[in-house]
Length: 191
Ligand SMILES: Cc1cc2nc3c(=O)[nH]c(=O)nc-3n(C[C@H](O)[C@H](O)[C@H](O)COP(=O)(O)O)c2cc1C
Image (cartoon, rainbow, N blue to C red; front, side, top):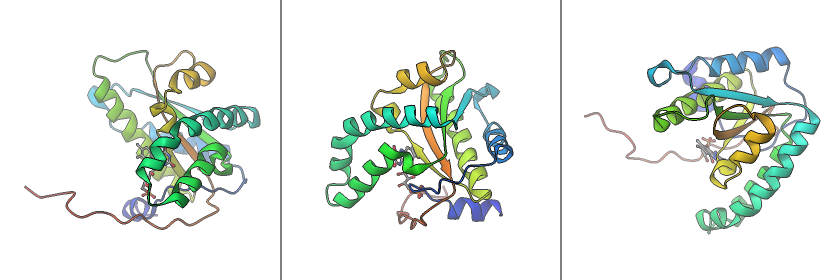
């Protein structure tokens, strides 16, 4: 798959087949994430790929509590689309049946340039999504657990010697083909 095709056809997938991801593919995806650019080349990222049934069950339990707290945010954002609220909540609590969830952290406890670290980890996450999609593996980037204040609990459980939690990313073979949310006008200019 060409880069352009991958980045235009990638979608956030919220329903997955239970089929596991071959470990060699998961390794290639994580390696691709780590090839992202980073501010002053600090490579600020650390990824914990949760694959075990116990790890995934613990994650779903935490995500159930994230979803409860996230409810007012979703109902406010999608006030005219209650079905979107229902679908998103169902996804967050079940992780859509994904066999893998990658947790992204800062490698270190703190960085003087936290914004730079956040941009670097975000670049690595996008690499991860595209590298997965190139293999036909769908994904969904989730900031809800960080936004709702569950980062410390996730760090303590899955990466106790690493830094701040950034985001969670489900991975799995898609069991749905989501439509592209329309892209809005006026989001770039050549100046
Ligand atoms: C930083 C970030 C945080 C996101 N957080 C969530 C989330 O918590 N839950 C969720 O269901 N989707 C989340 N998404 C996915 C977006 O909803 C999705 O990217 C957007 O609707 C556009 O759809 P597309 O990815 O198919 O292009 C997040 C995406 C980004 C980039």
